[in-house]
Amino acid sequence: MRHCVSTQPGGLRASLALWSDFGYAAMAAILTEQEISVLRADRKEVTSQQLSILLHPKATKRHRDCIAKVHVKSDGHRTFQILARLSPVDDTNFSVLVFYRGPGKARYTLVRCNGNYHGEHPNRLEIREKTGIQRVPARTCHIHYLTERYQHFGKPQGYAEPSNQFCCFKGAVEFVCDSFGFCIPTDGLPSKYPLFPSIK
Image (cartoon, rainbow, N blue to C red; front, top):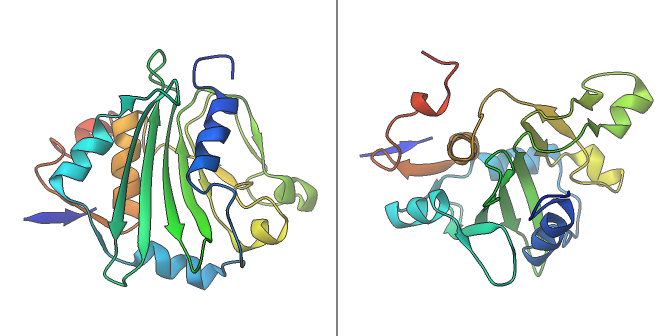
């Protein structure tokens, strides 16, 4: 049965280089909110082996962080990639990303879940318009979402929201699977709730 569900090593500079390697900046045409919603809902089957790879990232020669990545074909015949990054010295320093490979060489970062390892993040458009979530406080787990208006603004990963949906690396992996159409084996994680200590 399956369930759909800085100054430190591997800091911001290393992370940006890593994301660039896997298409962080390789966008082309702007995706509309409707197109983003379709990509998010498109069902994507993750095998037990792929889930194990994601939950146990390994150190690489190229990057100081521990890295895991898997490619997944969706029911809609689209190609996605989940990339997970975890610092070997700070378990709050992690990121879990979902990439979509579009036509040609176009690649989009649909979501990036971050641990609470860095400073405040400003949402520039909300600050300018004095509306919505204007800032994510420092040392807060948060999620960067691809949005149509931030693509037009020239900063496709510029919008973020604080989140209490996860508080650890494995919780972020589960959140991404649960929220972006990835179907994982029910025996791949011990249970949904132990990863979220606030939920009884």
